[in-house]
Image (tube, rainbow over all chains, first blue to last red; front, side, top):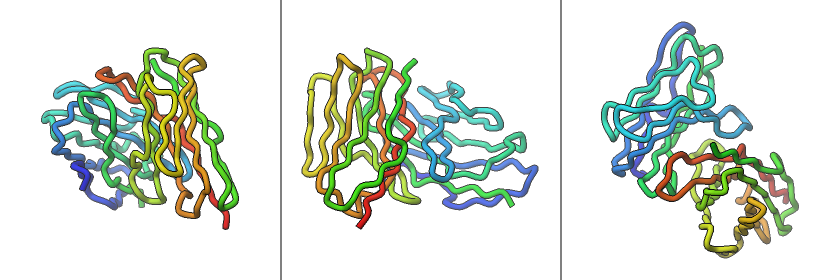
Length: 112
Length: 112
């Protein structure tokens, strides 16, 4: 479905726990991005990666970590240091031409 | 780096009226400007885009205009329908460059 898959769709986390959100793409895209979206708000950039084994902090990286060991995969870990993690998380990948961004279907994380 | 601003943040129009959303960008090197539509609870999807060698592009009821000198571009939706209600994001990038910057989004409500 669009070549980029996020899992799970819904995730519940207890306070103090780390959780990892999965993002996989089969589009052979070099660049991958993680965004956070709060209700009624826009997209805020958490981390992005232009190439394997390299990634950069976005505007709101505190409390999050990522890895890019494979071109196809860019998992996001929400750590216990993130004070307000309840949000909708979107992953995107972009091809070498740096034109259309393809989004996953999103993961809705809720802290219980 | 690139900074993209978007106005208005919310917009309500009567069904059948037109809607206009405007974005400005800061990096004169940007040459690709897409627009994304995000329906409630879904992923953003590309609806139209324009490159810097074109001043206007139209696709049925939607059109995008670009003013490179003033560094702004606009989305125009004519004969709005209830299914046009969504959040719209503009973005700016450099083809074959790096980074892909989104605007903060506009929530459009089409009132019956």
